[in-house]
Length: 454
Image 1 (cartoon, rainbow, N blue to C red):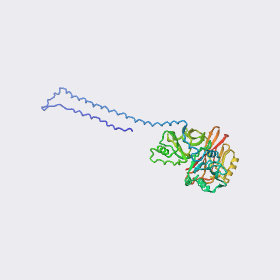
Image 2 (image 1 turned 60 degrees about the horizontal axis):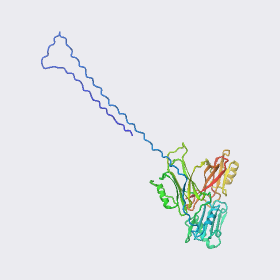
Image 3 (image 1 turned 45 degrees about the horizontal axis):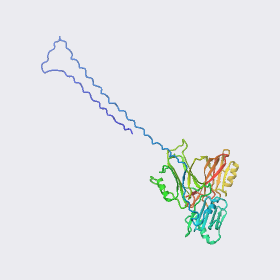
Image 4 (image 1 turned 180 degrees about the horizontal axis):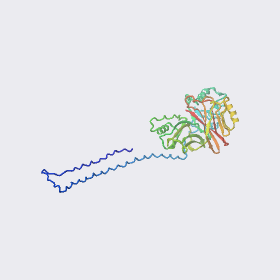
């Protein structure tokens, strides 16, 4: 900051010149008239010298502060693979589990959950719940091999059925069934061990968001698979380091869950960052994540951030490969309407004309007229969950991407997981979602992603 200096200029005063006449103490000498009197010359005054002015100093300019340079984004590493952990011996639990795993992986109705438990080292319980229209919930208590079925149950939109060949197994079977939604209901006095396996090829694991932040204290890229509480505590402490009021550490039940986390390092604060999917590929898991900067010219107050995201998935022994994706997004506009569909079946449709839209809306709503859509320029993507047994479902179109000559439509269905607390917020049984987007003749592929309430 420039301080203004006051200059005081001292100018010396010139002394006055005094003129004096000479004279003594005797009588004056007379002057003859004839003698001319020479006038006493008036002395020329000595001129007062003009003081030399003190030069005004030139003020020193205040230097313009140099702004701190915006840090360059942390370089992205190549595809990163986190090794898996050793799987237990297939017979370690007392039952050879390989044929049970093969059977479970072939199921076409286990999207919500598909679980295996070895009970008392002599039984195997299989619990499945999916999106199929007929009997979506299916449970079996086996003996030591898949051909020995001791108890079975089926539940669907039209009711259910439960039976045990020997009534002595009914109590155990009911307890194991209840444990799928209330994990604390472990059978008393009998060892119960969950068996972890990968779903079939191409499946997407259900994701439960745990944390997302744009100001992590971890400032370099990291890709983590967290399988124990001690590691989670250490990572969370580093992530929140220096915060006056750190966020609470997420809860992960490591007996049957694990966490996957991505730290982006330094990047544009206005870009996009997050885990998009965790899918099964060639005997391992692939975690797709996106990290993109804001487009040039975008309004953005901040210049840099250190983003992170952590999600929970079902526990797995498999290795996890992190792959960065850059989808080419297609703009769309959600269509609002009555929140509960009257359609009982699960649907995924592309509508390109007004007649088809009116017919579909009549089946779906049945009361109000269909929203206006200009089918000369646009088309509609429409999806429903179908009838679900409880009010615990929400559906949304999260992304439409152009990839490989087709449009890929990602729908996210939210529902209750085994550790969800309380009722699902604003959820219904017959959830639906619809969007309008620019008309296209490209093939359309729907991809389903499940997410649990926490």
